[in-house]
Length: 105
Ligand SMILES: [Zn+2]
Image 1 (tube, rainbow, N blue to C red):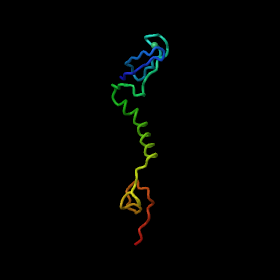
Image 2 (cartoon, rainbow, N blue to C red):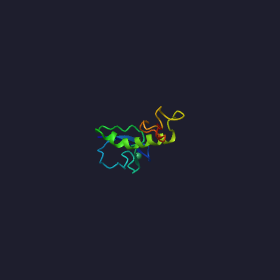
Image 3 (spheres, rainbow, N blue to C red):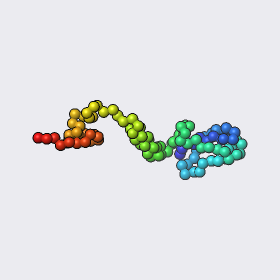
Image 4 (cartoon, rainbow, N blue to C red):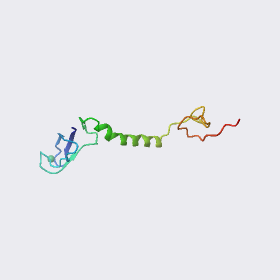
């Protein structure tokens, strides 16, 4: 069962609450009784997951997307002429971006 961090926008009261994942987020601040609570999940605010597998299954898609974006913005530098000695040949490694040309006998 995860521990959620809550921060009250009205009085600044911060506390942790054990809740099941299916429970609704709290809204009412126990200190000032105003419905100004923000649940700090996903903000790197020290949310502790005690359940098994929740973190991995929930986080993997976004992590994968971030990696993909990183690859797009900064492609790995390839040596001039190709990324492997076999680049551009039918024996090119998988993922090689160079067009394959048939070797002439
Ligand atoms: Zn409050």
